Image 1 (cartoon, each protein chain N blue to C red):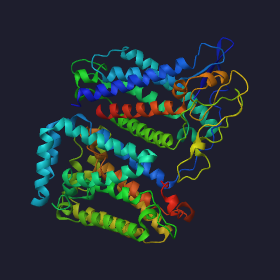
Image 2: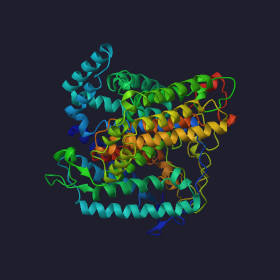
Image 3: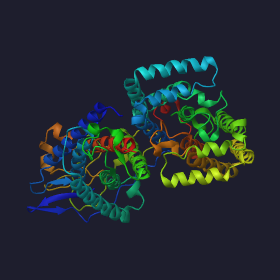
Image 4: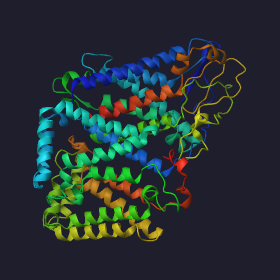
Length: 331
Length: 264
């Protein structure tokens, strides 16, 4: 920032503009940086919820649509919720949006990080059921390309893995292991990515035109450059549904087991995970349809990238074991 | 469409930010010898008024072309500042500097006014609430999305730094103009990265023994004449504190991101 000093009746610039040496900033803890990224995604999610579309009947219809194909015990509460939202649309949607904004701000605000992360887990589980119909896991509609197993459940997973506590004892090999331990963290990663591999091979996805139809369906309403990408990708997999699904599933399996490999190999599979997540976000999810103006969230792509970064091998000193007394202040 | 009362609340918030920024400029007494005011306060004042006028129905400010010129100048100004800053501090000018967020804010405002697709009713940029945000869209929505992402990033970062007590709630202590910036305890530098910086993380001072001193804090907020700072009221001290500037920036960044997203 520049400052103008009025000296001798004239405004005078203090020093030579732009030449002030900034003090060295504090080294940011990796976990705190990842928490902030999660906070940013929550904030974006909340802001998206204020869009005009969310205040239209389209939103309640979208909620009701997630009940289709689910077992009655899952579907009936979704239908009830959708009806409730339809009747109190402005009030409830504003509450939803505000909660998500507050979750983002709460995670970023250090004194409230624990409360916000805990609340985000509860909120994410609720939205996974009532807002996403369990991500289509039970109705056969789930696909890695459309956000399976539900973007919002990844928020909850990230909140658990980035919980601001450190397990005493051995230092964690990666950030996600600091709160829950390496075995649990690796198991969660394995389950998530193997489930994605499974969904890639479901009948709907391995059908000849399955992936083609899914990608082509994202083109509507997008800016020209993104629509062109969608068209190109759709034509690439046209009639190749089975082969493309198998290739995707193989990549997802490699990613799933990657965290059990030595650090150098693990890094390679994590890079693959990031690349796959970005491809999913751009091609399969069209940036969560944000540019088309009807997105409720940025979808799973950025969350999968963030998750992969949580498993990036770190030096032992980056994840120190802390005493119980110090644990309370750890972020 | 997004309810008008939500837009009105945000417009009121922006007017508060503008009022606070105006208060900071006045409290810094730029008409007196040796006083200092900051360009970010001026930028916040202008942005607050412009955004309030955009959000609120019936609140007309300047014509769009005037805002285009103003924000083009501010963008150029902060761009120069960032370039010069980067020559001295390298990448930290973008990540930890204070000019880069204002450059993004100014550029986002310039984009917003320049890229607005005329509404069906011809309402222009005045009053998203009056014509309905559903009819107010921006050309080049990809750019709006990119700006929104960056603004959200800076907002989250500022909130983290604010709650980590990087920014104090007392006015920056003075130091001799021209003395290289030191601000040794800022930013919790050197503190454990995984713990909350303690109270010592607030801005400390070098001896203020003369008048006509200018603070050069990391957040670049107001500086006070040494004598005046001692006499100033607590309220004035709080008003001129770095925390207030950063709080204004947080409110402004979040609101700007909101506006960009709902106009995609």
